[in-house]
Image: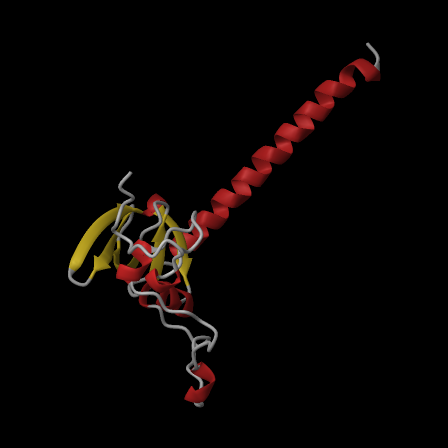
Length: 149
């Protein structure tokens, strides 16, 4: 047998080795991340729910999903342990980036804007050209009058 015939098998075995090594490394990182959990930590489950850790047991964790509401989850269901700042930003909407300027005059409305109330908006038909008022009509008839022929 020649090395050329064995080359595809060698490449395949090498690729499988690299894939299993990468998966094992990710699994070890997830285990170490879950070991960092402690009561008071903010977490995100693999389902996307944000909660606070109340108690950590061997295979489970007790999460407070709402004030006074506790749920028991498997440790494997924890997708990420979050930093306090990130957890507060996501759950409570706390953000240092959102500040109100001291000068309220910079918050003026656009003078070219047109405000239309709901009753007037119902009468607007964007597919038709606007009709003239009764005084501008050439036939001299009001809007409700029909031609009697």
